[in-house]
Image 1 (cartoon, rainbow, N blue to C red):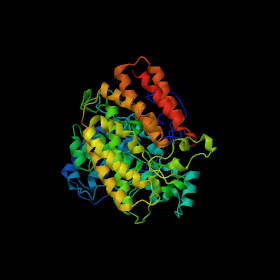
Image 2 (image 1 turned 135 degrees about the vertical axis):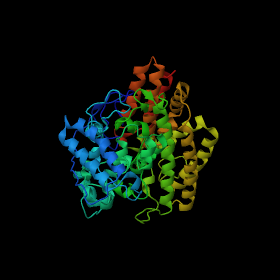
Image 3 (image 1 turned 60 degrees about the vertical axis):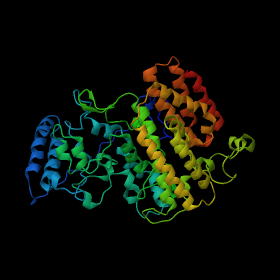
Image 4 (image 1 turned 180 degrees about the vertical axis):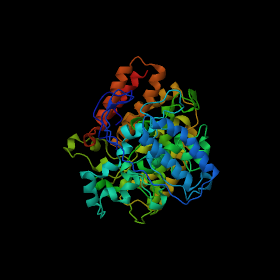
Length: 523
């Protein structure tokens, strides 16, 4: 999991997060290791015989001072930057580019040392200006393509009968690279650069020029095609396009059986491990916060949980309705179930905690629905909106009851999921705007420890969510409260992470005891 934020100690956490890690010291004191592999960039040609206009020349002139400063430390990068800007300016002005004409131009266009390619944060700037450097050196998104080229990728391609290498398959590249059609490319770039700037920020051909000018409003860039990642709701939705899936790109049970990791997500934890390349709080100008800084991690955690539940319910609904973009109709989709309910070590019956506790809510032998996106979040929902939480409980219980059958009814599952998703989205909108404080955060942690057994029995994925939640909540809480038992609490949260290292060996009773142990320390 997220070893090494402030609440955890050093450990080998390579199994927990899908982007495997172990190494660079993060917020928690553990280590997250990143292997730096230079990005491969190819300069694109400049189109000729195309119309120039005043707006385009303004963009070029705005870029020249930047390029001149770049020329001293890095002339090749400066030339690359100018080529990209001129190419964009000649092809069309931002005002002329319709949504259909906006094109992807690759991460190299962000690499200028005076833009986002500084080797370290720039003093006196409202942004770090080393975002590109952080991405290429530390962020596992830049290595996503390489995950397709190894032994496991080759084996998956063979099992799935892709008829091509994994690194050439659209099905894989959709989430492992900045993958576009030829018509969507404004210039040459390499898919081997992985999940890069425009994968999240949108095609840059229209907004790159204005974006380089001083005081260009964020709203203008968004209007020109930049994706708005400032709010927790939109940012979570963006991440979930790959970390949960859409109709067009997803991980199903077939892919998991072939070797792809099961997908899970938690916004605050994954952002910390990425690591973040943006300031928290965001600044309107150097040193001037544009948003409330306190409890930002709690807001991201709570809002992200609600959004993920809403998106998961939408996914279940379209799967039940046969809504995959590839028009393959698979039902029931076992990717919606709890993996470890079936995939776990089979020891002597007398040692089975599952059999000891029984199978509440389902017939023994029937599959268990993956409850992890709800089992922890429900306690925060009850804390902030009891009425909506009660409604959510009703709808999710209907989903769980239907999906924990050998042959769930499509319509019943879809209708219950859509109802639950709507309530979760309403909660997300509230959680994104309410004020958080020490008392609320403490109560959230105490509630999790008080419900340790219920959470633990939800299986390993639910325990994961609870551990990440405790980690995020305690990091925020400890910055404000300065608990006397700080070292003991951090060690206890770290011990929870360690219990999740081997999913097959997960023991609900042991996890519940470890989570419950934290409660008295918080007082």
